[in-house]
Image 1: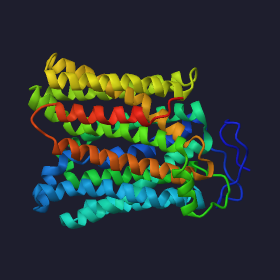
Image 2: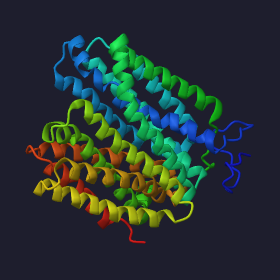
Image 3: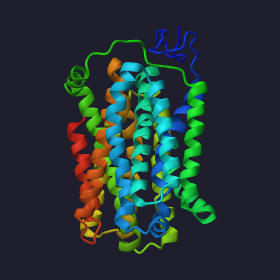
Image 4: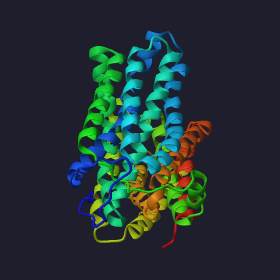
Length: 405
């Protein structure tokens, strides 16, 4: 029998588990394993961004074709999660994760060797389909072994990885680009993914309890009729979309509109990322003393106030750069409270639907984030109003749909 990590959960043997299953790692070990899996997403997205011009020159492509390699990755993540989620409920977490990591490594290797943009796009799709397993299984494993405040605390610890990785990944990608060319970036990401596969194979046992899941259609209908899940999942997706609206507009708002030098832009962007990370770690401590739902509700009120501040600063121009920077810092800090708590609360009662619930949670977040980014771009008018308005609209909507208790 497999005893879940000091959580008080009953001992279980998972589908397809070994005859002599291993004890799961302790809290720190599990966070490190899941953190390694969570880091693969930012590495695959952010590490090759500095290489876009080099890829364009080397493959003789136009800018839109190279940008499509990023868009296809997001599409693959959405599609892949909807496949992996139900599969992980049916056969367990570990086997889909191993297959997904193997696909991810293969996609990276194909990308490193791609002789044309078309093949690079195909490689990125394979990479995304494999990477989607990491996103689904990471959330589902947390749900398998933790509940309530403990789940929110563990997810907050994972936010530390997901916050630091996007900051360091472009720097590492730029260094690799200068030293060895853009293909080396895909090679390094493949090596990290291969390491993750080895660690998972050795150290991560099955965490899903044995079950014969209901038909997929029935589980999906039950999931979508669960108002607790739908409302918290919607709030998490709306908060995430607000952060992507900021990311889409950040360079224009700071560099073009407020004339911050490119060198100083990193300080503003880094400070906002630091606020997001710090808030998530404060959240990990707060949920030990206060219910996650209460922390979430109060953070959401502050987030609404910060978003309305941004709108006022963008419309009136009062306060200039510093008013906008202050509003963005507070808004992004509140997202550090909102995301882990909303995710934990959405998955809390899912049980045998944890995989499919985690899949829909992730897929909706990416779809809404992509839509928010496109909307900000479409509304571009040379001011900060589109960014502020989209952020405020999303966060006020989150406040409207989130449970009041």
